[in-house]
Length: 452
Ligand SMILES: [Zn+2]
Image (cartoon, rainbow, N blue to C red):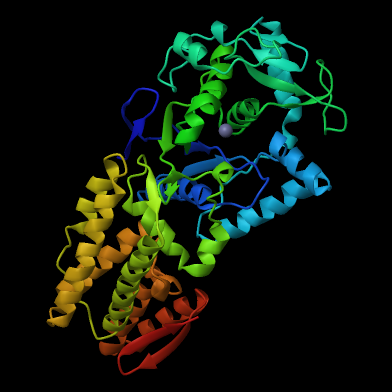
């Protein structure tokens, strides 16, 4: 059972579904610019969590939003003198194309903030009616002093948060830690109607409304980057608490990306685009780097790291080719059991210790190669196949075998056994099954070969 460090409690929590699927909400992008490698890290971390849970038989329902209206989108649209919608749509298209290239599985549901404005207005009105939110000159604010336990995710008391908050000169907020649920539109800004005048929802309101609407109360895991702990996640949670609604059971936060020692952020100008990275390297190289760092630790990205990761992937791919070739060399018999799957699972289940889990996989690759080289085919096949299946569980399926699914390889082996037993009817039936799976089947002296 996977256990992850829960930011809310500071201890490990079991990632088990209560009933039905495991519900995961991950804060998605604000689409005002192309995705950078910081986005790449968080999407890969939650992609690995999702894949790993799925590989263990858990059904995951993964929801991740797109913030398609925001100050930054409006600023960019104004500076480029074009409609804000165009900026949002263009950058969202760039986002999905980069995610595709990185092999990140698309969330099952991708809610857009602008599709939920009515629900957000309803939530704001309910908070105002309860006396927890107040209408002000430029927006509606939540009074955090009314929220029990505010500061849980920030791991700070309300007093220390208040002392550290920037006091804005406008004086529209009753307390510097209060935050906007609704922003009143300035002339020329996009807006939606509300009882508080035309405006747009605050970012923190988007996520609490969409996660509860699509996943229901008490969903299992809410995730995002460490930079979202406070104020974004604290404020999402505050609204649910203020309404007496049960929010996420557990919270996960991934560490940030550093490039040459500085935090990865657009504001400091050290942006490295995800598309650029996928142009220059096998996109799996970045996934492997992400796996080789612990998800909660900061991660440094250097060119040399990406090159080393690409070389490691070549070793994985070449083993996959050897196994594929070797699988056609005759009947399998019973292979010795590999200890890798169990040891890999042990490391993964312990707060997603992917650095050690990946070290075990590459150790198994070395040992499989050594066994195959010394002629110990059963040991080589067993260890090699275990390494490939662990790699597949975290999305590093070798390119050499990605075109031939494991199921098809197994059918091809059975077909070879049928042929060597001269059971032509069974061999034909197996050929039919392979053709139905979309493979072209060829007989070679080394056995069945599959092509797509
Ligand atoms: Zn969010």
